[in-house]
Length: 222
Image (cartoon, rainbow, N blue to C red):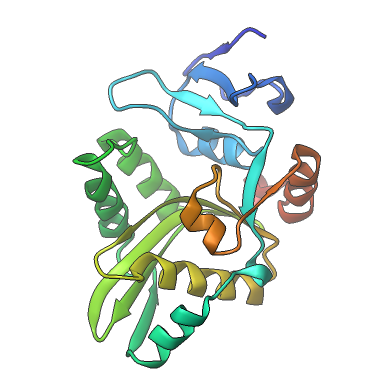
């Protein structure tokens, strides 16, 4: 299949089903609020190295966590009992995203560039992005951020300053989303960490069904 090239002046995407086997769907465009919302509402997300052209992805083998199926290990339950655990929602979205960037920047590298930070800041200010921060014994321990549209949450990145910091944030997020009736946390890709927390692969057909059930296609009119 040919990789589609997007124009900055026209907000559109090819059919997600036309993505390459590795998930690559399109190149170019921009990170405007409207384009990002259109992308995520169709299971598409940007992922590219800083300085390179924007790459848009839609893997057909999806990895998710169902909020009601978040796994809390015996050791984690014990850890929670023996510490003063605090959780905050949207404590400081900009700081949380930047901490996610810094934790990776000097290790394996990061896709979180200045351009990405600015774009997701716009999503946050528009009410479509969320951060969760965890505290252990009064000190910032970890956090995560992602995009929230309808009843679907699209996880982007997480960080840990202390042991179990990001896990605690994810556990709270799952419980919060379950209470709010969300049907999935889209993890985008598999990691051992996410698998240990209850992540699982689903078919693209099932993923599309979750999107259809969870996202009001008239969000742009709200």
